Image 1 (tube, rainbow, N blue to C red):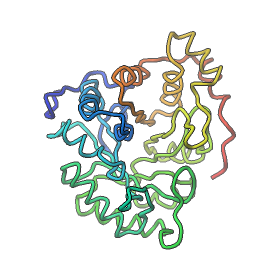
Image 2 (spheres, rainbow, N blue to C red):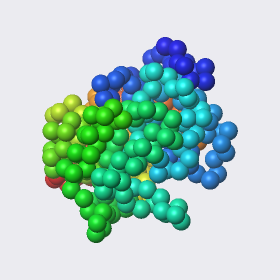
Image 3 (cartoon, rainbow, N blue to C red):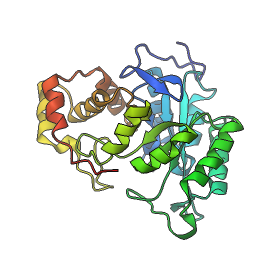
Image 4 (cartoon, helix red, strand yellow):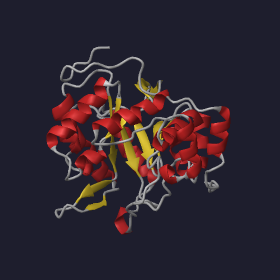
Length: 304
């Protein structure tokens, strides 16, 4: 497949195989742009990483206007965008005048954020817009006037979808009850914290399985930021990795791909070698015994 952006070409086969996102076929391993916002990342490095990802077959890039410069980098690196590329953004927060991340959950604020993403990405429609709910950790918690009903938010996003500014609606950081409530609106994907060592969102994943919804885990390797254990530090993960001449991170990502066929990964990095390593996780095949051993590591699911 030949892309139109910056002379890039999509590779075949796609990293990790393919699955559907909002009715479009994407590689199961995509790219999360948030790490490109770090102050230590040079602009030319960020542009090169984005082009490398697309050349390697990535067809799903996750971003948000409130990340900072990520949308501008994506536009500079890849526009005019390849027809096969699905850009996915997130709403529910914004930056105040001091640059601090603050809740922005009201319907009018969601509309403003969609419009800001369209402008900074330089597009007329965002493939998927994920609504980040701020009811629970990790991250911000909505208070006061920012505690907004889910139905009101979905009504606003549905209106934007009807107007053609949004291709599809997703959810982020939700409970199983919230996903169930949102199903009539048509949900393309769910982003929740989840990984081989953290199964607290298992009830949400089970509902995604039931309805064929794409599952996009964040913090798939754990995170010190969110007080999640690191999969790369686990001895079982490390032992399986050693037996396969792979890295612990690749094993943890491969387990996620094996756990549900509609899982889409969005690992992020600003390092070319690390990007290649993440994409190569899609080639790793875990034995039945390895999958079982890894499956035993997860924390008990919290009923949703």
